[in-house]
Image (cartoon, rainbow, N blue to C red; front, side, top):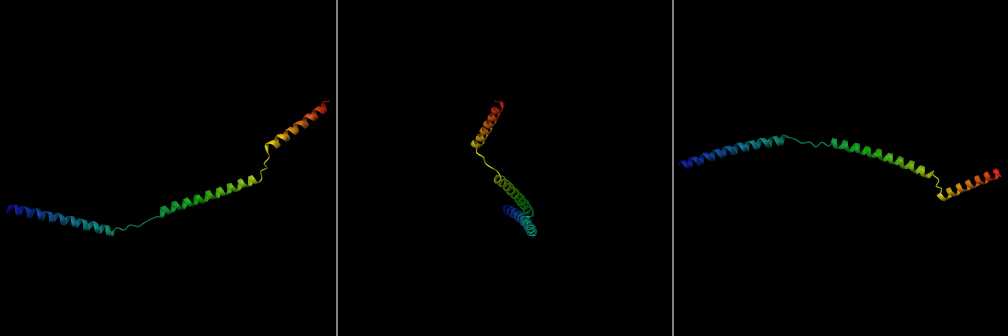
Length: 104
């Protein structure tokens, strides 16, 4: 009989521990139900907005640089190297002829 009493004591003790754990889990469940989670994306929106403004300013800057570069290209005159050398040779030959005629 003592074994039976001992087993019944253990069973009662286990049931009591189980009831305490169930009560604790119910309290946790109630606290979880009362807890509300709100999704807040304001910081992400601010970061995206500042990034978009920065991209827009960069795009405007690139467009202005492109327009300036195209304007400079439009107003440039390309002269081939052989033409520059020929003009220099003609100038030097004329200078040489003038000096030769003056010294004569």
